[in-house]
Length: 215
Length: 227
Image 1: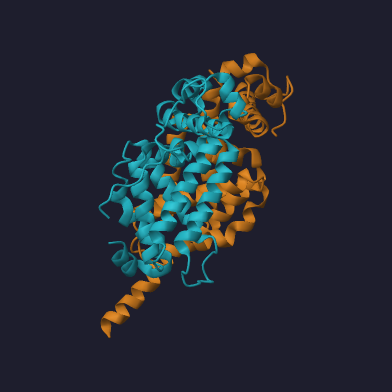
Image 2: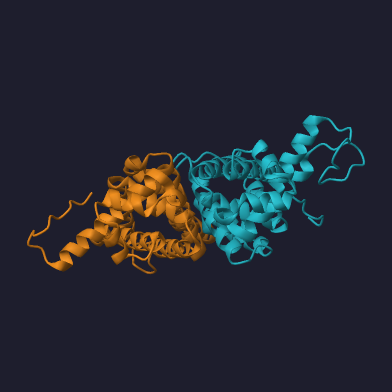
């Protein structure tokens, strides 16, 4: 949890607001983990966040709009962690491996947020599910080996990548539901194999196909 | 396959005495055994929930919607179920068992990879003919809370087992690869259901089959088998 900033701490107004926002998001994720979305009340959120009801309503119109903002904030931080890790690698498969590790570590460090992003967002009202749909599409894009990068990976169909992304999200969601968010990093190797399998098969078999065509 | 796909109707699961129409039983003395009456009422409630879900979604479906559609009293509902979730889980269990049995039957005498194609085709055919079931399985099961999600994972594992039975072992690939891929297929299904494309589900058969086979057979072979 983010520490509460005491009054007269010498921080700017913006810093105080940002701190409050983060605490409300953390409080929201915790409340969701305890109560589930339906039974989460603004009272629970403000209590866990350590802010007043008035402060909550200054920032957000409702529980719903707070949820949407918390999802966006969480998803952005997840994407940033993944992108930063991937940027440190040159080859596509290594980028995928590093990005996956960073993503799993990020989620494992904050199980309530993992629950918000991977479980509750799916179960919530339709606008947020569309948001989730967009996240999956971004993920699918990253799962396709880039064309002509000189690393020999064969392209995979867009629909395959979309399925890989959906399968990954659904599997992680299952682990989080089972209360094993903190063990997500252990899945790295088998999930990487899963994510690489179609591209690897396309690549390997295309060598076989060429060989048998040549014979 | 030219025959009409079967309909999923929990109300039809009760073994009816001859010549008795399904639906609400006449009040008063009808001479039917009590256990039959109870079971009939229970499945009629489940059936009603199934019909209400596509209209209202799980979160907005009320007990009043269900009892009105089933033509039973609130008291009768709560005599059968502790609440909406229990009723939903029963609908899900019946629906997924029905679907799995249909896939078992269709793939009975086939060897992998043909059985995977046949099985996926059968899933899509059954769901296309039963929009309420498609809705239940692809959309609502995700929205109805954690118990439903756990059952969804179990159904995926069962389907993966049926479709991948007698597939040559591939120790270098993750053991639960098929289940993961089916989870992905389910998310593709959900998109079609949400976009009102339930009837067109059979059109995505070859794309799904190709995706499911790709890791095992490579691009060229998967495409050929899926076509």
